[in-house]
Length: 315
Image (cartoon, rainbow, N blue to C red; front, side, top):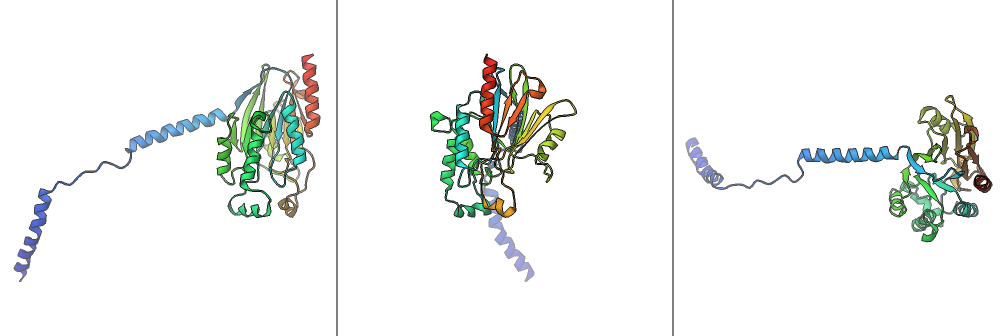
């Protein structure tokens, strides 16, 4: 019986063995790039990104003359139902019509609720589409039906990246190639006679109930050396100037922004400041270090001082 089963098994295996010998199976090429090509691509992408990041660190904004110049750092706009529109309109008009001004958007252009906070749109009489129209107006020049603000740098704050599509939208409509950076920008205002280094962040690391400029003070001590440290985010304002150990005269400030009377601030017990929505730094590159930078919490007064300084320079 066993021998019979072995013979039967051999008979069954013979046709399979015959087919294997007669058939030539295909060989398929790899469905992806060779690993070495993938590594080469990743290496090129890494080097390109590193080059991009290095170029953003202390990039230069060239100013044509040594005439006094105004750098206006606009606090969180939050264009929408909680934005102080009358104050915003006044300041936009000043920025658009004052000669010798450049502007920095410190971030949080609109509320741009995302994630679980998207439910807050139900409590606001504004749509995502309307927010984008306001942002486009804020960014564009007068000839493009925009606000006409002379932008130098535009930052993305936490609200701008809450729904990530919004920051992509801003970059897509940035036809004038204004530098747009996430959270923080280190750049130089390069005058013919000197350079002023600006460390602008949506917020610097570090807080204190005793010092509203704790983050800026920390940055002046431990980060790269700058002449001006400025942030937003907290919806409060403060200004300070001092001489550092290396004899740099540094200016630290926080811009209050334009968000008023929001429920979160009330429930959390945050105080509501009334001034300093935009901080204007009037820079005289020909002055001595202790008088080179003069900060103003009121944009109107600062713009008037800047105009007077420029007239003095021309005369």
